[in-house]
Amino acid sequence: MQRPWAAIAAATLLNAPFGSLYAFSIFLRPLEQALGVTRSDLSIIFGVATAVFSLAMLLAPRLFNLLSAPVLVTLCTLSGVSGIVLAAFADSLVMLGIGYSLLFVLGAGVAYIGMQQGVNFMLKGNHGLVNGYIVSLYPAGAMLLLPIFGWSLHTFGLRATLQGLAAGMLVTGALALAFCLVANMRLVQPQTLTAVAGKRPPRRVFWQMSVVFFLAASAGLMVLSQQVGIIVAYGGTTDLAVLASTAILACAAGGRLGGGWLLDKFSVPAVMAFAHVWSLIGALGLTMFPAPWMAATGLGMIAMGYGFVSGALAGGIAYYWPSADYGRVAGRL
Image: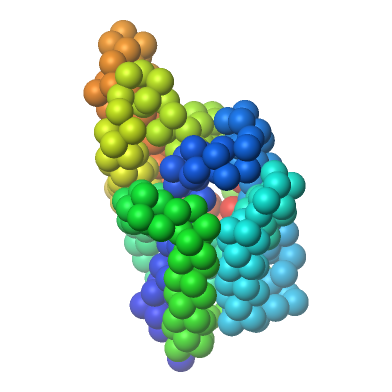
């Protein structure tokens, strides 16, 4: 018997720690000092990580027929943990890139799509809300971890903080595996593929959603990867930047959850259009009032707009495509 609640618990425990990807900005200054590199060097690291994350999402559906859900959870956990351990002991930009941008992010991308696929097989309703919750786990995880990282970096230093993250991911990964087994989570159901083959929407829907998501992600990922530096550049203190960054991540998480919830009440185009208008208002406010408080507010609105689109995208896939196609379509989008 399948247990959706256990599947959602497994997704939460596996994906939330991987959300530390969105807290990368707090490691910028410690990494600069530890490795003797520049801010632009570290921007390359995050840029490569974003590209690998995209490739991992494309790879994930190809693994569904080869690996069971418990094996996928185990491999993603081990990849993420080994990547953070390697990053903790990195003494060069290349070593950091292999650990963080390759191993850690590879596990994150596959887990992101794999958990969505597994949960969507069990959903009977509220596709928008549940999918919005699943995609909100990344910024929510970063929001919870950011103040812990700030305290740990100040108290124990960079390497100990990353080692602590690796240990925590090992524990949450083991718990996610246990819940995955309890849920009897599956990644493929061949009978579903033939039963709902005619449900797919026109091809233009895919490209319309792709363009809208690309525009939102272009702004959203810039905010989430550089928020601390941007607020400081507008005159804010480092303490204010860390506090504001936590709030910005909360906006991103709330936006993803809210975008999914709105999708259960309004159409996909309506929610996505509203999201871009919301982000535009934040960007215009920052342009007109270039101050630390407005930087925090404007970046929060952009992050929330990105969240609205992400939640609507995740739920929209479930509304437009059959559940058996969810991982494939989500990975390509």
